[in-house]
Image (tube, rainbow, N blue to C red):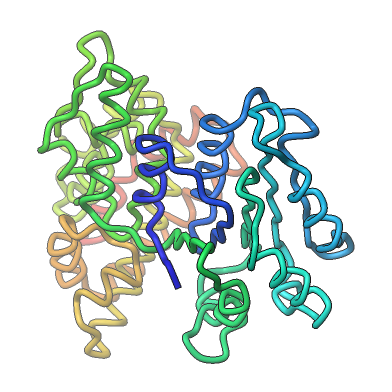
Length: 359
């Protein structure tokens, strides 16, 4: 089975202008599949129309016919105006099982595919990550079995979930360079450090990097936090640290910075609710001897922040943490029922309520 990664495949389409007659795109990171389809359309057909760009869907309550699809795929010819892209989108798990007639139809086409058609089977299932993993198991996985049925000397399998740091770096550097934007190696490393296991989100934020590059057309490591999070990400953590140390001056200064940068009080409260709930969960997991790295992965804590986070967890007594959570829940309720000005004042007085807990 010829399996290729998303970034390598995209490079072969856009840089080497390679054309592949039969492609199977699959993976939980399915948003990347549309980038591949768009790249094929941009590089191999003229302006899209109803003849040269066709989509068929297999989904609940709406099923296409493999016979009709193959007839359509065979209708293209050598001339540029007659080339085609045929996309088959599978949205329903039940359509991963082919009946004998459809197996025969696809096998016949795979034995001799039309080289003037780019045929794409795009597995795009509306599933949670754990459910998807069950379907892609090496043995008795429905997606795995479906891929095996499509294997042929002409088939290219594109795995959207095989992501490597170097590929992400090269992709970002190349695409930003094409737009006249330079990006330092430090910035690239910072992106990877901050996003960890969710590298795909960097690719999806490409437009934000273009906008934030500014007149200098340059992105350095200091710019990355602002680009990825809209405001410097450490500001929320500075807020939490000020609460932990009962540092009213630092707390109010950080809060002012967030408000000036357009962060709404309700967002700050929501973030604090999430943060302290994670501390509470981490405290429970530490108590039951979970490894620190596993806790970071379960609670989606960035690698570069994990040690600081775990130290905060260890510094809180359960009683104090419960008291803080009670105050934050009250703030959260106010943010949903009171006006913004009232909530802003409540946030400002929050640090003093924390200090009173010790009295």
